[in-house]
Amino acid sequence: MKIVALSGSTRVGSYNTALLSAMSKLSPVSMQVSLLDSLKSIPIFDPDLTEDLIPQIVNRYISKIREADGLLISCPEYAYGVTGVLKNFLDWLVATDSIVLKPVIVATVSTSGLGGVRSFCSLVNTLAAMNSNVVIEGSLCIPYAKNKFDETLALVDDITIQGVTVSLRALARTITHGR
Image 1 (tube, one colour):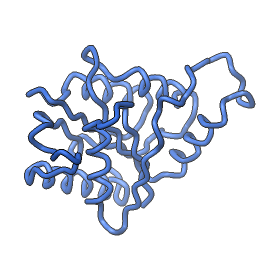
Image 2 (spheres, helix red, strand yellow):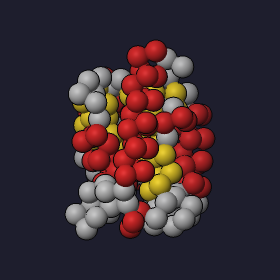
Image 3 (cartoon, one colour):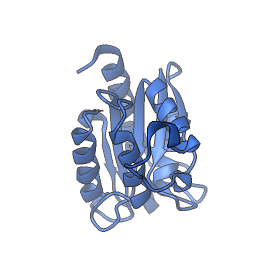
């Protein structure tokens, strides 16, 4: 299974990017997880661009997503919603079929006790509008990030590691058997 991971964070030392890295390491042998480079290099969405004028990096990312069997998206919460870089990239995807019915695990990681739940809800609503297949039973809101990762950003919390394992199994099951 080919899985593409997207971090909605551009921050060096991001807990959300660290979670995706941990998910890659904890994924089953049958799952190949590849993290897309930072979304901050994606230009601002322009609906007036014709297909032949879409920036090369956008087309490359869309192709990788189209070829993937599923997605992992982890995003911090900004102003009760998703980050601008993630929303911008999702806007580029709206006009494509690249994530229609594609199984997606949504995760949020936060230093607060809410675990980014407002960002989570915003992202799930956006993905639902895009007709993706959000795998709710595998999605994660992780609070108190400072207690879950060590100073090298390795995931060290046993309960969160178990949650990630369950999440990846749910994604694999949805890819293999559908909903």
